Image (cartoon, helix red, strand yellow):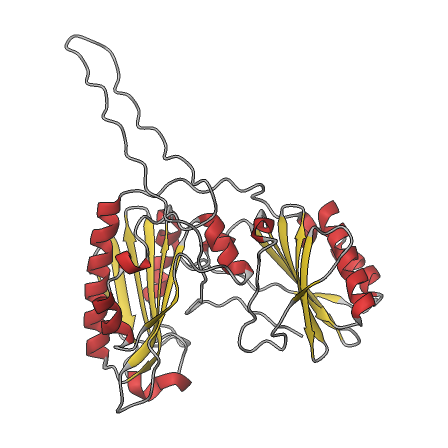
Amino acid sequence: MKYRAFVGGAVTLAAAGVLLAACAAPTPTPIQPHSSAATTPTPSPAAASAPGSRVPPGCAELLDFANVQALAGQNAKVEQDEHSAPTRILPIAQLQYGAEGCIWDGESTGAGTTPGSSLSVTVAPDAKVEFGTRFAELMTATTSSPHPAATENVAGDESGFWCATDLDALGEDGPSLICDAEMLVGDYWVSIEIGNVSGFTRAQLTAGLATAMSDIATRLVAAGPAPAQWVAPATTPPGFCTDSNNTASVRTILGDQTLAAYPAEGRSVYAATIGLLGRDAYCSWTSPTYGSLDVELLAGGSWVFPGFAPVAPGDSIVQSYAPVTVAGVSSALMGCAEGGCEAFLAVGTTMVQIDMDDLGRAKDLAVLAAFAKAIAAS
């Protein structure tokens, strides 16, 4: 059974950490007449001292409340900002990278009442290259994402946005993503996503997006470059998911020789998933007798323990977690419901998430210990 999926539209983030100011460049030493001296090179920005947003403006500074209301409604409330604690592997990865995720919930109440929507703004520093590889694709209409031609060159160095045509007709039962705006400001990749729209017209949202993009661009330019990325204790995940012998190991651990590797889906990078790039690995197995097993590894992610408090997605069968003792693991949380279990483990410097069938508490803990040992050795 699968309890998680990587999304490619609206991505919910939880962000935490302190606001980190950008470093100012020193004034170059002037060259004296008839001298061959070179100017003093500008030093690289100092690295962030802890995981957290590296974007100098916080969510409230990035987008003022009038702009938020224009896109999410008069009843918009902050759901997540740069101070929110991470609740899953994705936001942990985003904090390690230094991205900032902001979400406002407009409490959509249906046509004919107060307009509302869900609004997500993500700013990823040092992401000019990644933006360049994705911008054209994100602005292009497809069968799965039909929309009018994107409006480009709105603000920043490069930008564009689109909104679906019939917003109210789509409503909460429609696609999760109704409007998408992507913008490059220096080295910052800004992504604005709007979903669950009710009561807004397309003209209202497109006008609000153009204003929001212009204001965000102005504030990022004024703020200057972000500090360098936090130096995590590890930047490459263990090799468990890429080990050619891992299926044999999984079969031995679970005692099921029918388990077969399930092909991993490719991951496209977004501003809201950029922290996973190169630092996260995912692998899965399934069998008609056992069920399914999912393993995810985030390099350096164990810093989030012991205070980590995971929150399950709304469609997950597991909704609560409790500390458990697992041999070879410094911290562990597990929750089980309706025949399935989800566990979060600190294995050395790696954050590990394992979704598996419930075999009973004693057997579950033994299986987790065996996986922790195999992951640590990979």
